[in-house]
Every structure is written in C-alpha cells, then in structure tokens.
Image (cartoon, rainbow, N blue to C red):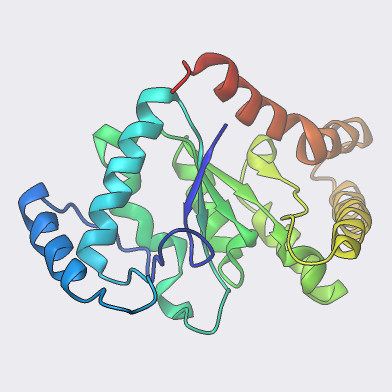
Length: 227
C-alpha cells in the first residue's frame, strides 16, 4: 500500500514543495477560516499552512504503517508553478527525523528536474524515482534523456517504471512499449560506454521494470498492520 494525496490531482493541491512545520494551533486557525469560505463554493484547498499541516499528519501515518508516499514533482496542470515543483524543495521534509523512515517516491521523472531527482535518490536513502507519465508524453529524444539523467547519480535499485494509469487505455500500452524500448537503448549505451556489463544491464532492466516496485510496495504491504 502507499499514500498518494500530495498532488494537484489528489484531495488537495500542493502548490510547491517547500514544506514547513505547522503547529496544530496555527492549522486550526487556518481551518476555521477555510470553513468560513465554503458557502456554496467548490471545495479546493489551496491554503499552504493547512496543506503543510495535513501533509505532516499523513506522513506520520505513513511512518507508523510503513507506507511509501508518492509526490507529484515536476510538470503537471496549468495551475502548477513549475519553478516551485523542483524536488530539491523537499530538503526540509527529507531531513526531518520524524519522517526519515518514510519512503518518498518522486513521480513523473520530476521533469525537467531529472538530475535534481537523481541527486536526491543518491543522497537520501528514503527517496525513490518513478518515470511514469514522462514516458510516453515526452519526445523519443526527451524520454531517452530523462532516463539517462535520472541514472547519472541515482542507484538503479531506486528507479521504477510505471504506466501512471493516466487517461485513455492506449497510453498504458504506449507507456509499456516506450518504457521498455527507451530503457533498452539507455542501457545499451551504458554498455558501450563501459559503465556496465551485459549481465548487469539485464539485471538492471528487471529491477527497473518490475523488481524495485515489488520490493518497495509489496514489502510495505507485508510489514504494515491493517489500518
């Protein structure tokens, strides 16, 4: 199991990733103000202190039950400020002792911040990368560069393919097709560059396409008590 509530596609909008600690008393004030604004209006939570507080509560639950947490990073809806979606902004959260045991999965290859995402995965043991949606939506060259840049620093055991389960079914097929093809091209180039051997490339491809996700999500499911 995992938590996925920290995106503009989820229950609330996380406008930028510079998440800070918010005391319960302060959050209560913002929540009461938020309720006063709800008269006959669509529900859309954009208050950053309240969002940060709710995020803290969700991360506490994730820490207790060993759930990985997925963060939308990089490009997304038009109301997203891409400058503020850089995963480097998560530094405060990643270094918070109470949350350091929570696996953090950065989605969508953090495009265009692939190198930054790869750096975080190399420095912080709890950070993982998922390149769904970047494949197949980027150009062929863009998809290739995204995977290459993620792998410049990120451990191969922390990178995962996903279809992102977004939009029409045909995109699931294209994601799987291009995901395998682009990964093969990147690994073949790594063999030519003498970065890895053929045997290592075969092992890495299985890890990225299957094993890494199984280890992360299945182990979390097996070790977590029921809610």
